[in-house]
Amino acid sequence: MLHADAWLVAIDKPSGLLSVPGRGPDKAHCAAAWVQARYPDALVVHRLDMGTSGVLVFGRGAAVQRALSVAFASRQVHKLYLARVAGHPAAASGRITLPLSCDWPNRPRQQVDTLHGKPSVTGWRRLQALPGPVPTARLALRPLTGRSHQLRVHLQEIGHPILGDELYAPPDVQALAPRLLLHAHRLRLRHPADGRWLTLQAPCPSSF
Image (tube, rainbow, N blue to C red; front, side, top):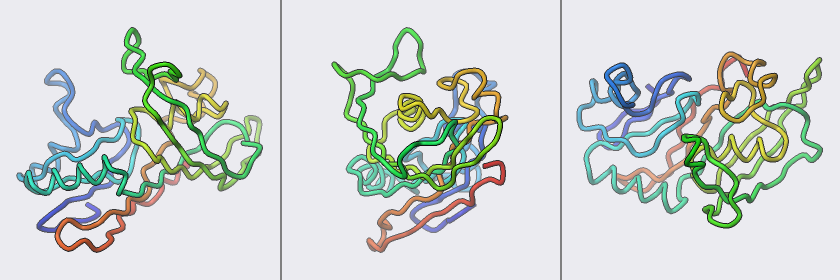
């Protein structure tokens, strides 16, 4: 548990755990069920992919859930992710602006779609370039939009897929890590009670 008060709850979701229940009784175990067993009025505000770890926020009660959902949708929540990717980006930082849409025949995969895709923007900064038989790099990522799989698709499209990504990385890059090396490190948002800035941070796993 990262934070809990009368208005919201935040946890550090582990990789491999669903944010919300999936289809079928075998996928009922999820972050939402774990939180609601402790705070029955906690409602889902946003989601993380099953493979992604890090900060996940729930609103307590319908009114708070709506307020937080509006904040996420209107980009009033500042997000910072950490990732380890294949290769060394040539620049120290950059911005990816590639529209995305669902690849319907291959769901849940998403795709770059310049005709019908929704605008999607990711800022990135290189934190460390790591040498080795397969060069890798640690990146800080700031998604300015919140599309499904946005960070994963954007990084794959610029030639730096995330290690351990079973959907978008080629097999040799997927095999470099036992999990998706993507972590929701920090969220900064206005507290729904009084509007003060609240920073929620989950330590980066040592595997990164």
